[in-house]
Image 1 (tube, rainbow, N blue to C red):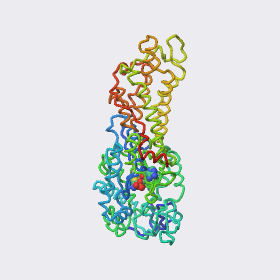
Image 2: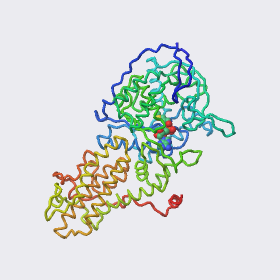
Image 3: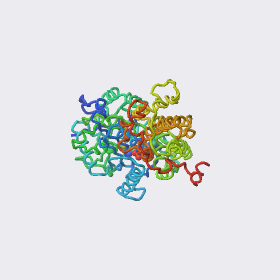
Image 4: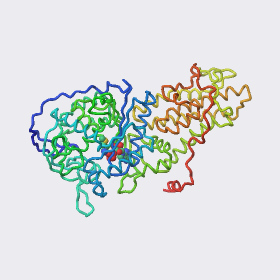
Length: 593
Ligand code: ME8
């Protein structure tokens, strides 16, 4: 028989405190040490985004999370082929009070609302080139099965008990709040209303009998997990924040609601009077996608990377690992955390009317343009501000002028009339810097360029690993600038193919620039897949030659044969990235505001 306990809401947001009436037996939670099961072990890697609530249409923040996950996943596929060794799933979070209430407000059934908004997310992700292998909806039968099974495991472990819950609940955030996180503010009719201090969303007082998860038993196991895996949560300040939280109170967690209050959810197995708490339901989606509870899931877990916004860190870095440990599983391999996009300095919100529609942005700036902007400007550690003018400036300068201009300079018929990848002359550009001789043309800065581009793939990989994709793009952009400097310095347009003195050096200048472009195109594939394809196709690089493992930059410089020398360039297919048209009305408006 389950015991009834009195829960008092104290401590951190989202948890209740229980006055323990039951024995708390010491338990040992096993973990097969996720840090030791490197993703590269058998090459498999599984990426997830948060599953998004369907109470409102997607905005650029949701797209940003999906793009970060997509870029990580695509980069991984380029590093460790075959692509089949990755799984990647976004999805929609469709249960809970928030959705139940949103459907009622919209005059729809919850199913109608979920179908409508989930389709919007799926269409958006498809349009944006999100290369997912699945899309999970929590209203699917496979998910209900997984959640109920997971519940059964927790119950069998003695980790769930019944208690009387009393405290504040925020339906918008779907979380419990302690008194310290609630403020009183004037409501629409002038009277004072309780709201969440963190989100400003209204909260209401709840008193009901729920199932409670013994979260308080997990402080030490969670600390051990984080101490043993210093990169578990990236970037580091977020790991630090979680360790800090673990120093505070860690009360048990209410994991169900009364069905009479919340009917839109998954019933507690064997107790229809209770509905499973939407966060427990939602988190298990990560297991559903890989086939849980069938044993196939074990080949993907815990080789998992969760990409999340900072707003849901506590759920992913405390509740989820505790639930997993409780169910005898390891915490996820990595949790990558990013900050938020604001719009002209303000939080994006429906009520402020400043929500940026990502579909419009993809149309205006092209899929690759907008993907590049969000990933180049988004800094995981800090909030970033969005405004249209910034997009135009960045894309024109980095994609149209610098990268597109460079490609044009090296492939245009005037400068490269044979339309081939010219030969590299080792006499003009010897491997050893500082050599002098009549034919030596390379200068000190040219060696700096070769060295920078040689180390670029590793630098980019390190930035991906640290979840600093913007830094990876910054590094590529710096090298693009350096390559333009190289071309400018040697002015190949002043050299003559007919001259036996000029020709080998002219070919070498173009060869080096094309080799640099081949590296840039390869490394940009995770972020701008269509643009990179166009670039690599123009260079005549075949599909088999586009993985990072196959890069081998400037092989002739390093004493190896070069498979590209003498190869015909691909067909000319127009500007790599046209400058954004200044005459467009929306752009004029963006410049004015
Ligand atoms: O929290 N900037 O769903 P949600 C950047 N269903 N990213 C943003 C953002 C912004 N302004 N706003 C939202 C939920 N996001 C739960 C998740 S997971 C098991 C359940 C992104 O629709 C960011 O990733 O509120 C954030 O964590 C997520 O959307 C929250 O989406």
